[in-house]
Length: 292
Image (cartoon, rainbow, N blue to C red; front, side):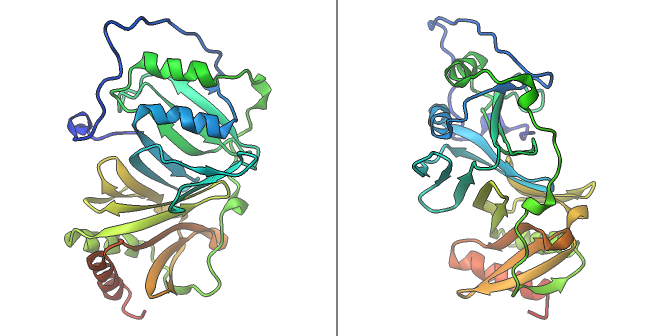
């Protein structure tokens, strides 16, 4: 995960967690050949322990796209078995019923300076959730946190990473196809960016559903990878995986869906939450897709 060069100077970044007069104990953890450390599958405990770090980089993803935002760990409501959870707004939901396994890393990241992260993988070994510590977090603090959540897992338990397209939700039956040219998507986002408009992005997998509003300060396509957002808070989509764009209308709102092979739903976009953002969203849709 990369962070902008000026990230450490942005307002709201937490202070350094280290303290000169605080004694430190070095820790050693058993790792896999890939450098992963097994941590508890008590999801509520893991989530609550992560809350001590203040802002973190929260990422949800699938094989073709991802969403990243700097947030404080939100409070979640859990089911009795601690396998399903959602926040108060329903914007972040998890289901850990598919052979999920949590892993950690304790290593300095050359691109962003983070001391480590948590990766939660599905039954195919693909991580659908990452929680990354901020650069200001001391490695010793991250290690102290890992000491509370680390567990022993046989080395053979780690699943092979295999993309399972069946895990994707499918395009809605009433969706209206508006284009088979996926290059219309960056065109739409650039048009919105000209008006400093905001969009709401939703990414759904079998294990997670994440909805978040983004400011479109950056819209770019490099090597087929679409990136849109502001600084570290952004969403990305591999355009070669997309096949068509479609619209649905619900309660007066228009949502644009990006479909992949076999109508797999890769990403959904809609207008921002205020009236001005919704106005610019509808105007941009009509400009790029005159038919709807």
